[in-house]
Length: 143
Length: 143
Length: 143
Length: 143
Image (cartoon, rainbow over all chains, first blue to last red; front, side):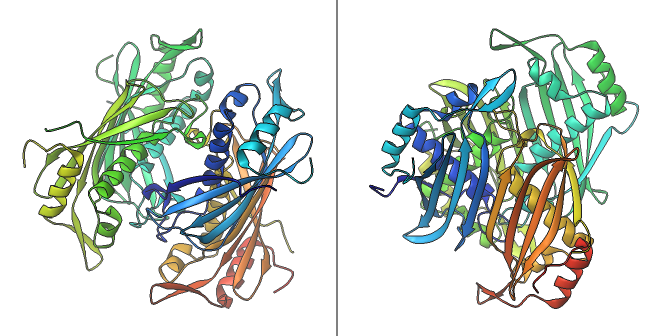
């Protein structure tokens, strides 16, 4: 791994808080996805274009919460390519706020193609992998 | 108008509350849409099938809030067909909880068809209008 | 009105799209609120601090849709103080994308104070009104 | 484990779909939470009441996706108490649709008390654990 990954920042919005006064735990999965898509854009790609040709359905997502985020708090999501298989990418995410760890997560997406209305898993396009790793500034150990 | 409209009930979920401890004001637009779609199902229709052929994009939505809804509170959405034009339906909604008025809203949707990737407004299908009015138990004054 | 209002920009996120391939109509109410809160921050205020002392519940919200927003599309929300009563603020919003009108909306919030666990409407604090109008670069005609 | 767990059912709503035409992957975390809270209600409890005294912040959440859910599709969430530690509950969830497996997930929540504005982990109340296990119809192996 050469660097610290791609960084995406924003604030907690009011609609993302719950009655406990903190960002709802489901919001972190949207935070991770937003960082993933920002990485794709930084790589000169759009996962939306991919979506039209089949897309990248998630097969797994997880998050471990260390401390809560509050309304208007600025946070940073760092995303790395943690693992590549022939047909899937596993991203690893670290969320911080003011340098303090908020939590860590992972998300695994499979590359697919739409055939006769059905999604079929296909091999990862080499160029997409190369561009994402370059933009993330980190490489998966096993490729 | 013959009756009191179609009724849809459910509870406020935790993720729909905000740090003020009440259902977020944007949630009411999802409540209205859920009631609309439940009305379609009660009419033996699915707006999802319509969606594939062009769908019913909204052109206007509004809600007036009288009292808040809290976590786990049960509420009822009553939906009526308030107005019909050649190509649009305006629904009127009343939200109540335990008999008390929570608020009222409206939503206007246009009937469309997808042609060459573009949405084009088309005349309301007579059968859809007839079924929705029968299921809602109320008729628009001006048809 | 001195200027064109306060401007807030961002992109449509994947989770905000629906099966029709466009931003869900309820998302625009979150867009308006985000712009409102960014205006408060630009005015050196936080509506979250206000929230702890009672907050600003919405009494009305509406949006008129002109054209849809798609995934990753960048849009701009312009917010003005449209009307002031003794105890409420009505904001007016214009959403554009690449210069094209996406839609317009309004939102009315009441100033409240928490007393014995109940929200009671109170007079708008003069300083808050002054700061918001200065940050918005537009003044309500009737104050 | 004595039985098959507590069952919670509902449909996929339009606002929960994304441009890929399926329920957004983040929605499953709300589905799991809704099932958890329905279990609490079935046990004669409300996690909302608990929330006022400190609440049950999540420390971990994960979901593995097997097949997608579509608009208006009815699905069932089965929830069990999978593991108990002195201060935490780990729930296990299975989501099915028409008998077919949609995916499985877990969620771990810590019992807390609010002291001087801070959340402090406390021992699980024995009565809450007993009631939840009775309502779920399944017991954690290690208590």
